[in-house]
Image (tube, rainbow, N blue to C red; front, side):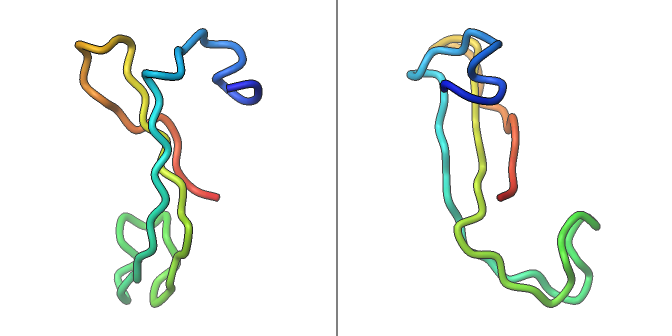
Length: 63
């Protein structure tokens, strides 16, 4: 919240979720942004919403 977009967009902590995931990518490479035949560990997914009544959206992902 003190760095990156959190420091400038005014998002409140209750409107942010950070997920870590581990997954394998097959030979297709997924959507093209991942390395084919690779394993990703502790991959970050940052979800935000504008308020408690809004839907969550992926704001950023990666390492």
